[in-house]
Structure formats: structure tokens, C-alpha cells
Length: 109
Image 1 (cartoon, one colour):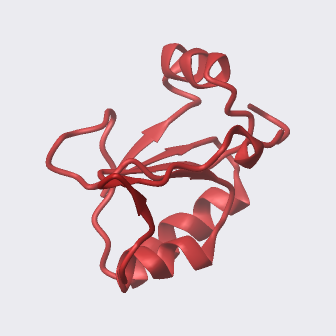
Image 2 (cartoon, helix red, strand yellow; image 1 turned 120 degrees about the horizontal axis):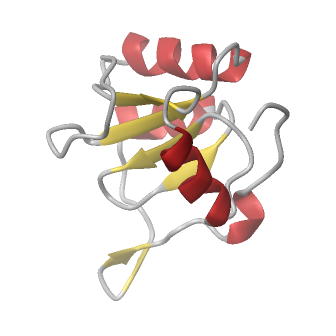
């Protein structure tokens, strides 16, 4: 799916950059696993790009899930987990969120 902005009906939002090979791989992997997603093209959304950079994200794609997970780059392991969920670690019933160390730099962002 390719939407111009995130939508609550989607469990996954993928923020992509133009010409990004990892973004293409992420879209293909999500689609091949039957995972619906909203796509936000950061090349056409400078305000969203600025917000993500201010939050510390520096590498595309940035994937955010409905359960609070987020990561950047092509992560087939994470996509597989979305497709085949298992008991995820939680603290006091809240999902464990990735640390800021997951955020890395990528050219073009």
C-alpha cells in the first residue's frame, strides 16, 4: 500500500526516502509476508522528515508498528517477527521499545 500519510487503519507505517535500496527491500518483504502498511515518502514530506530527524532518526526506512515498535534500515528479522508474532517481552504489560542506539545515520536523510 502506498499512502501519503499514516493512517490508523494500518498497523505499520514505513517512512521511505527516494532511491533508497533498503526502503525497496523493506516494502517487498512486508508485502511478501502479507503485512499491510502505510508508506510516507520523506522526499515529498519535508515536515515529516524534519520531525523524524528531530526525534533522532537518521536512517531510512523508518518502520513504526501499531504496538509501539520502531526501527530503521532493512530488518528482515523484525519483519518476520511481525508476520509470525510470538510472545514478546513486556514490562508491566507495556511493550519493550528500542533504545536510541537503534537510530543510525544514512545518506540522503
